[in-house]
Image 1 (cartoon, rainbow, N blue to C red):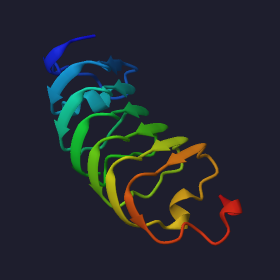
Image 2 (image 1 turned 90 degrees about the vertical axis):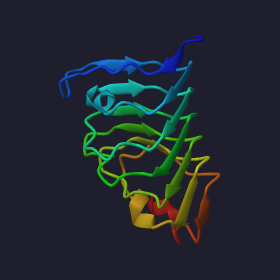
Image 3 (image 1 turned 90 degrees about the horizontal axis):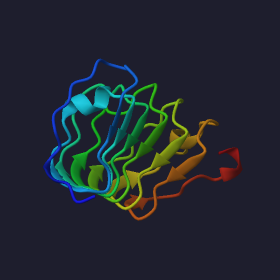
Length: 148
């Protein structure tokens, strides 16, 4: 599509089962905090900028890749019920978060994450995909990656 402007502000009850789908457009500005009350958030492939909200996110699927988001990942952003988190191709900084047991898919490549990788961050059997390439990470992943 060729939709432009700011994302509309929409309010949802927490975990009500709603979807937000405004992907592949030309929206700019911040992502409204209320979007993260929806079960699934798809606002990827736009020109969204600003910081991720420092709120407790209720969404289980978060697709906000391929935007221009910046700043670090807030400590409360990933919750116990987040299943699929796609943050790749943004301008996010800071260290990688501890991975929560509910995550199955974690895409954080093509950002500016720094620091070392702690193997225990990814020793969760539920993880099917971990993508952290094209960042500024240092160190050794693990001595025995067969445990992952």
